[in-house]
Image (cartoon, rainbow, N blue to C red; front, side):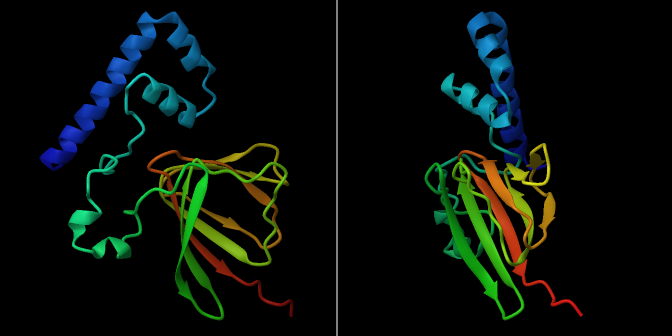
Length: 184
């Protein structure tokens, strides 16, 4: 591991340890931590106390200028780009043929509107390149959690919705769409 990555890792451990120590000393904070229902809420609570524990391995600090220092190559990067505004998504078409469409989707604290369900005519395969997300399928009682590096196939016509994507620096999806083959 490079020295910069080691320092990044050690700083995250220091932030986590300090947050744990504070939560052990402050009963109200400990209760607020106990009331958190998922990772996103814990990260937000820690941030409200001045601790940054949400950054994942290899992610640069927000606003470190990594995009500008890449000599213009950042437009070709699948993982380095400015995060959209909270609640938003930015979709970039990467490739399109008559048989398939490949998109990069960068979402930040995004969710489907209440009562809205995607009901697509195409199959969709998604891979999380960064962050995590929670999806709900109409035919499943429990939501599905996806983490960085995990993929999921969503068949055409399978109703689903986005319950949550990560806050800053956001969730980055690679989504491949293709039409179902006609029945023979």
